[in-house]
Length: 145
Length: 126
Image (cartoon, rainbow over all chains, first blue to last red; front, side, top):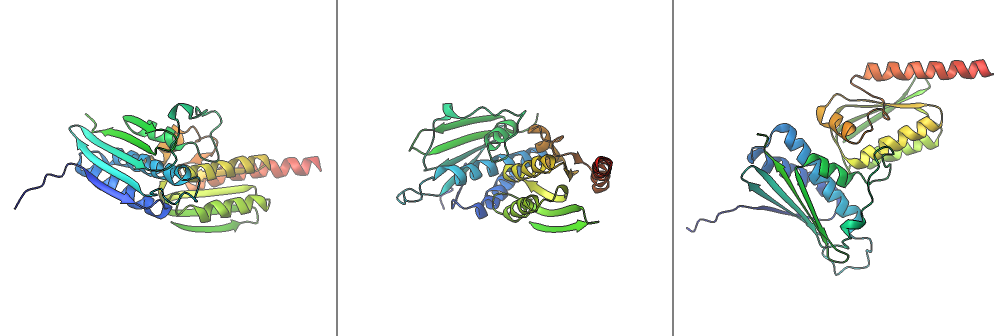
């Protein structure tokens, strides 16, 4: 039998809020197997959940565009000292430079905290997106030294 | 997510939320809080002692409720002692806005003080 090395654990969920909990469960499971502490796993669950919520809320503003895939792809790759999570959608995309600065003296009531929380709760975040080209959020949570 | 709500002593609305509150499960709470605010309710105790997870949507709902209660001259308090949720309140700078207390009795007593002060000032002004 040929042994297949699996480095990346992949999950594809529908763009539907009821599957966000599934993404959180997988994040917690893979996080635990990557050596993250319970507190780090809590942080990762929030970050993954917020990224999925952002896709659901913003990636498909035009429901008429049915040719787009509305799935959310999640890839979890254990790294030497932590876990890398990539969350990709194939939706509208945006210009990351145009994201409004969050002013915490006036916390937003109607959304806007998601990306801020992701950046605060993970060690590295990279957002790759462009209008009509989908979005990829790559985050790294490191194992505490 | 399980939600229980009740009005205590004819003035205080208590919500008890259990489990995970996210974009999927948070809608009943969001709607119920908004409806109560629209109906003029201005005193709220949100009991998150059995809440395991809270997302930014629910955080926005709490903030909206707190601001509305404040505008009406009332108050919203949150009872929460879970480190993962307290961390979110601190990171987003909303701990004071939500009047977060670590026990339901502390949250209730904060509300009672504010309620007494508000009703006394109303009586005094009448």
